[in-house]
Length: 205
Image 1 (cartoon, rainbow, N blue to C red):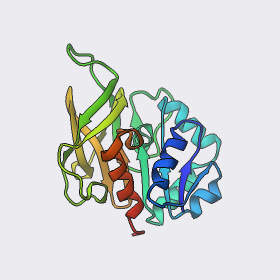
Image 2: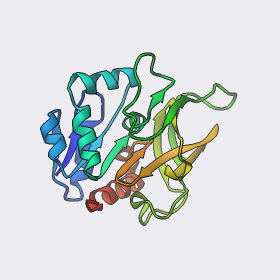
Image 3: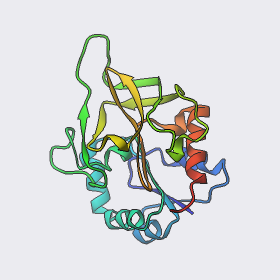
């Protein structure tokens, strides 16, 4: 069972439908016990960092997320859900992140020729051939982005794929059973569906 964490800030049903295409049993839930007992979990996210952390804390979901990850179950953060995995964000005025991955989230600089937010299709540049999410994915695959902030992991080896927009930034991060994608795989057509299929196919570590 894959728990899709519902905290009021994500493309919940689009993600659910995409995962179900590959035979995954899914459960959209905001209940801590259901999240903690799932085989895998997905944390989607659209919106502001502070609001998202507040919702997760108010709904008492952070301990369940930490428990699932500690038990080495596959966990996927999408867009804002990926950013929340880090320690802090320039967007956050009050709150830190979940601190599951070391590093920070920063905003794109305003520069001529580059619009912020970064919206649209762009290419993935693979940093690792070992990341399970990238199985059978050709280098240069196009995926769909919509974001003003991007993660800077402290550990460079945590970056599985990058994207070039104003700067070379982390598009996919990976550490053991924890995965994050800055783009929206549920909106990325064939490439995004391959990535979600690869997540469905990951065995528990």
